[in-house]
Amino acid sequence: MIRLCTVVMAVWSALAVLSAHAVIETYEFSSPELQERYQSLSAELRCPKCQNQNIADSNAPIAQDLRRLLYEQLEKGSSDQEILDYMVARYGEFVRYRPSFDSATAALWLAPIVLLLGGFGLLILTVRRRSGAVALDSLSASEKDQLRSLVDAAEKEV
Image (tube, rainbow, N blue to C red; front, side, top):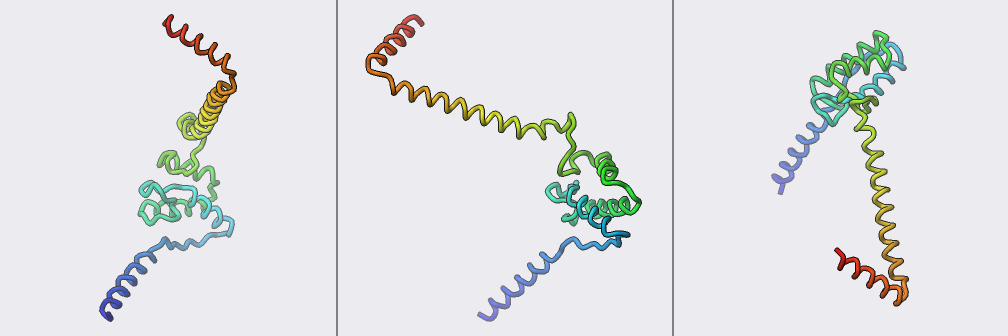
């Protein structure tokens, strides 16, 4: 029993050490405003290697390079838009979590709206068809007989 507890504790300790491997970088910013902009921009830029992480959370070497580059550009006095434009020019629109709206990304921005409108249209058609079926139930027996005779006559002609 003591061996089992020792093994479990050793495995748990090893796993705890692995999870402690986080992104820790310390940059000395010339102002707190630059540090806030750095945090904001690093959360908005996607790591080109990891693809599902922003550069703030990624440990990939390219993300480290992008964070260093971001720091340098902020300290040089570049605006947020200039930094984003530079990153997009170098790595493509993919590097942004929120790409700009242009002809290349129009489908990305408009697809949710089109799908939502299409879903509402389908819902309206379904409701109208069902309301038509309900109206058929409200017909009297003589009206139903007339309708059957009209349908039968139409089927004979076809």
